[in-house]
Amino acid sequence: MAERKWALITGATGGIGYEFVKIFAKKGYDLILVARNEKRLYSIKKKLESFYDTKVLYISKDLSETGAAEDVFRKVKEKNIFTEVLVNNAGFGDFGFFAESDLNKQENMINCNILALTALTRLFMTDMIEEGRGKILNVASIGSFMPGPCMSVYYATKAYVLSFTEALSVELKGTGVSVTALCPGPTDTGFWKAANTDDTSNLNNLKNASPRKVAGYGYKKMMRKKVIAVPGFLTGLAPLGIKLLPRPAVRKIVYKVQKMK
Image (cartoon, rainbow, N blue to C red; front, top):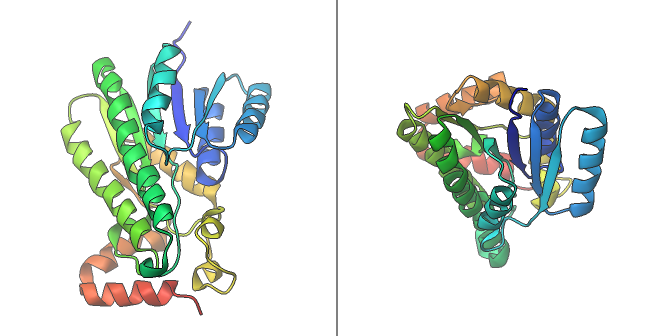
């Protein structure tokens, strides 16, 4: 009997994360789902196990809390599970001027988007290297390539994710472990509502990508061991345009796109 493969997905109950969950279930992976909403996690577990030949475990955890990543890792190790794929999808943003922002929310954002992602990567990577196989996908953003006035901390956290992933891709050469940064543009999830944008924001008037297509693209690129994955033709052109434009122009354009009417 072939060994079962396990994938751990954070932010698994909605948006891109939930689409990843469905993809991995269809591909025959057993799953460890991490999110805050235990009721939703249980519902997804029952649905997946009734439709697919997959075993689903879940861990209800707020990854912005101190020690959350270590707690997730400990619970997985207690099950004697080797996690072959880690999808660091959990994250959130905020909208508005930094001087008017809720500092506690900014700190929680950094904890979730950076600290938890870093810790989970470090902890699960060790076993992957020892086994000589494994894949890590970190969900970054097209915002990783630019500064983000009105979402300054969020863009900065995603810049970290991209830089971190690129550095690891070099360090992991020859280990059998790959790492990918998925950098989607605006996507049709609950992100903007959670980020406190209102219905008049220019962001809400943009044509958003399908989370299903974004996750499918990310899965494909991860399996091909691509380091940077930018879904969508126009979105894919953005990093090139940013390199060609003067930095002051980039800042001005991003601000103009994002600011509320």
